Image 1 (cartoon, rainbow, N blue to C red):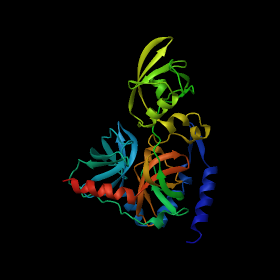
Image 2: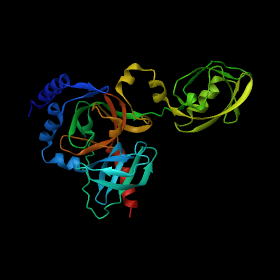
Image 3: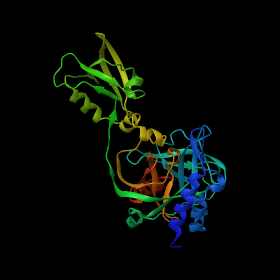
Image 4: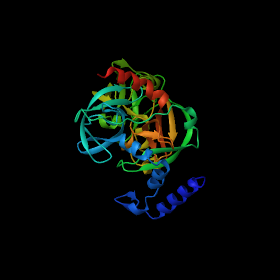
Amino acid sequence: MKFFPAIVFIFIFQSYLLGEYIDDEYILPPEHRVNGSFVAELLGPKTDEVLKSTVGIIRNGKLIAHGVIVDARGLILSKASSSVGARSIQTYNNDSFDIRIRKRDEATDLALWQIISPSSKNWIPLSWKNEQNRTKVGNWALSVGPQIEELMLGVISAKCRPIGREGGVMGVILEETNSSTNGIEVVEVLPQAAGDRAGLKIRDKIFSVDGRSIRKTSQINQIIKDKNPGDLVTLMVHRKSQPVILRLTLGHRAVAFDLFNRNLLMSGPVSKRKDNFATIIQHDLPLKKEMMGGGLYDLEGNCLGINIARVDRVTTYSLPTSIVLPVLDRWIKSVP
């Protein structure tokens, strides 16, 4: 068993060389996907327990998130912002069941769902492990693959830490001025960012934000910083000396500026909500954003946390049990 890590890395490297690109996506032929089978052998009978307690969250026939069964009544925990509008789940053996939302927590971005058909089924919840030493840098960690049929292996890649709040962003660059009675000029509008979608244009001059008169660039920055992604702001701008009212829904800073980061573009789609978490576990499992809401496990099959944000191709954040369990315990007690 002491040679297991070396064996895994050798097979992963060999498997990478045998893959190919199909429709711009790197695809590894099934016969060479050995990571999952090695992990399954390592966990033994615990593999079935992990897979059976994981579900795919479905909207309009498409996978939008993962979830984990947390109560025998069919209660499921998932990532709130990823699972909005979900109507059903799919289990590891491809059974489908309808669900409804029961609870949502903005601070953690967690949501509690309940299976409503069949309501009498005795669901098997996952096992939790609330031990900080299981999340040290370099420790092994597991998650369920995208089709809920195999396990993926990685390591804890950074210390547990808080992730600060970024605040909303317009996705524009403004002229720098400390005193202007002629408005603050828009110097650049980032394509596809919030300002672009709202209709802001280069050389527009911002005179007020939410009814507050503006004379300094710092005033605009402070107003926007105090708001959250998704908040609506009203701008009064002058365009060729004519007043125009624009309503703008703020975006996420990382999403807006990641559009210009070539490395992140190569990473593929990331989670929209990636900030403002009290504590996270960072790991390197190559999960897709549609796999957020699933569990992060140790080598004994115990859940260490909930995958909450895909940051890039080698960085995923998970909420540790110390953050998840207090919220979950309160929710479970309130559900009849």
